[in-house]
Image: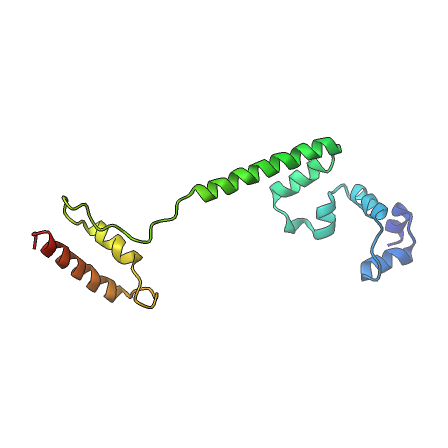
Length: 150
């Protein structure tokens, strides 16, 4: 503690209070520690494991940039986030109603399975495997009767 205090120009008592959580270092002291340990503020404050390697590298490098260049990094990150959010919104959700057939082509097992997989019981509870098989059988019979193929 003594050697650490000397490097920062602080008393052993002050360092002890920081360690015990009685006091916190001032901003200038924090900056001195960042330089002394050759790290970035986030790693010193939160530890290395809380940030991904990529994020840690971004912080380490961008913290060394002058403010106008830091703004470019921020603007670029904001633009990338906006593009990512647009892409997420552009993904169309799967329709809740699965069309069973093209009236002129036979009902396939795949179409039946998709319809049954999406189905839920009256109360919104997923169907059991037994119920799915029963409904698949009933759907096939009904479709074949309605389309003259049964």
